[in-house]
Image (cartoon, one colour):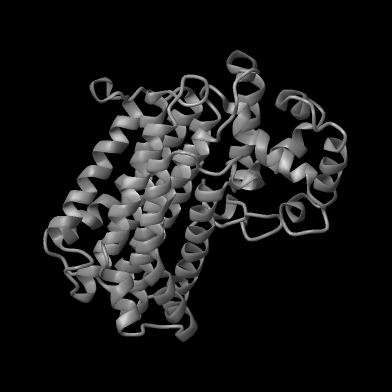
Length: 377
């Protein structure tokens, strides 16, 4: 799924499909007591495709696949009496925080180094906004994010508080860097070199995964696949950050050894997702659609491996290589995000993944902005 296919997440969902989405709202009004499949049946296929594309910021092609998966498999996994708690969304979004820490590090390195500054500033702006939106949603809930209620588990609440504490100085430093539209000395160093936030988000993701595994919505095997696929998004930006660190001479951001570790982990994890790794609790792809998407990511990854191997071996990364790796990492992150969504819609409880955001969308005043919208990095 290439960038030109990807939905522009900054736009109001209604703008993507114009009058069709207005009709979607009017058709769902009065049907708020219907089950998800009844709501789905009450709209035509194109409206469903475009709305799901907006909900998950997917390419229309991928959204069409999701609609097909829902139509084929929803009845088999329906759990009418189960209370939906947003398990899949919580696991996905907590892993996305991991990715955003590395996206911020990569962008700030390029800004400080004067490498592709405009694109890096936009990446930093988006990542900062996303981090704040997701962290708040995990804490107090956010129906537009697929999280129907505030966090209730004490251990997760504590982990969120620790992430918020680690995030505060980086959030402030990011704001200063964006205002200055360039490197700001201390602010840049804080963003680039602080690892406390990464460790805090790792703990939070682990706690959420442990608390939100249930057979009705998220089995342990599904959680494992979601965690690994979600981690790939983080590793892609981590690789970009490390290549930039080598280029600007910052060992805090990356060395050839740490780059080799990240590249190796990405390759091993991608192989596990593509083929399954039973001993580690990772099942093969649940359907041919996900298998095909993983093969596409693998092709993009192999195309970039020669460059990364060269940097690991001692080649000096030029500014053009730094920019290219960052761009490819962004593309692969989008592809992996789409794969994560396909996993969420291909496993038990898939209808509930979109039920809460869909009902929220139907219930809101169509004249008002969509709450909780955020953009993918």
